[in-house]
Length: 413
Image 1 (cartoon, one colour):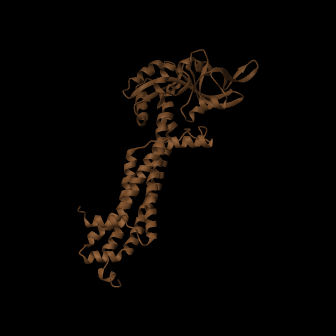
Image 2: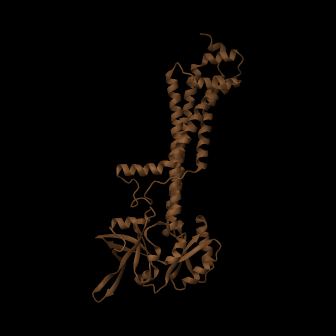
Image 3: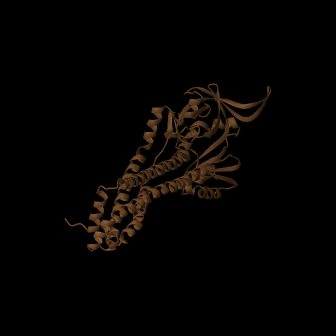
């Protein structure tokens, strides 16, 4: 079967056992280094993609994409909801009342963000209904003073469905007994879990109950918006607010959680760049490998030259040899990286169970598990970069091989 001379000799040099075992060792370490560099880069970028996805789906699924508020509480919030929903890019809108306070229960105290909502409309702008593990949004009824809390809060305060908690607002009320903080007893009607920091400080009550507690006289504090594109939220909110009569203020997720999103994007870029340098170092180890191979095979090169091999053919022999090392290392590293990216979440979960230790606590991080999302675009870019750097690293040693002088090399043979 016919094989081109360059391909045949290059593959033979790659597979042949060498007299100098150090060269074989350097060749093997170059291949392993390239393989591990590609695999780690794919896994790490997949984890960063997972954090980015969780930020969008979980955190930004719970908090509003945009908010429209008035200079004072909004009395006729129904008409505002209807007006903003006429915007083609607003998918849904819902009124809310929001305030900060403390929840006491089980002998402990925890700071919370109290959200007064209408269950029928809240499910249109939030993913909370999909993450209820106990109870339901419809269990929040006007006048019942029920509350829905996160799993982290329920665990830390040792609360279950039906337990009583006291909500304390940082506002004083003047009573015959003196100045006292404003507080009210609530009954736990549901527990949710989104696997994020919101599980520990986010609570939901019926808007009528929140209105009574915060004394808004049935008025809403603002209107939440759900838009069709997260990144268009600031512009859509501004356009929707301009269509309303009166003066309104707008806010969006880029102001409340945008710094977290930008931090993840920046970290992904910087980590990807640093790990790419590791791949580059591994790829350019092929230079040292081929330089030593050329030195070891100087006599063979001289014989091939005397038999009529051109400098270009000699170059192709060593480019093929280095390319085989680079291609094999990159392909195996890509396969390991894809496998690792698809299974890293399950592995970390198993490791946490085996060690009895949680690496990502919802009290510290915005999610409580290690996410991973494999993007084939990243895989192709990393694999392509690894192959390109591997082939680039072969050029200089191959050029050195093509410059061998046959007479000089065979003088002492």
